[in-house]
Length: 192
Image 1 (cartoon, one colour):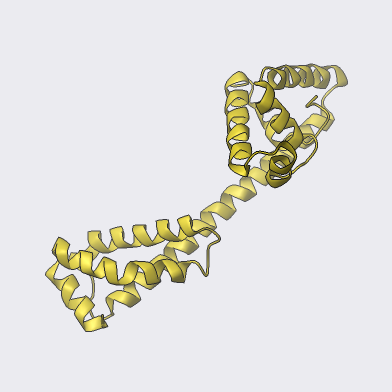
Image 2: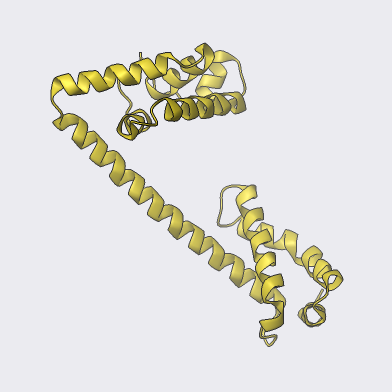
């Protein structure tokens, strides 16, 4: 569909016209976004959100530009916004990890020993398979793929078990966020 037809459809503003625009541009937009993101699901999310924005703003758009141009530039801007937010979150997490590790090294030995015992107790309370996978990942540093290969299970199962482990540990240590952060950030002998 050429840009004049797409613009005319958008001017109509009805659901049927919008569906035709969506069908014409959705897959090409997802393919375009795959240049910028690693996962197809992320490209699809951005594409869907772009069309939602188009629908919400359809009555206020300047139709001197083509619908295709509007969609592609909106999707790209959404990607940039998402990238910036993720980068900001990662910087914050890195800073938090660093502060936690520094505070651990500055604590008196007996206090650190007490914290390590509490964490070890929480890890021991995990279901057997879950605990094994958690220890292989955190203490031994194995990747999801390596664990899956060694235990002859799928990587999805490894991911699910790790999610369960982190959820249970977060619940177990909910009154001690410092300990949960220690679990998340440290690769250390605390996990027996």
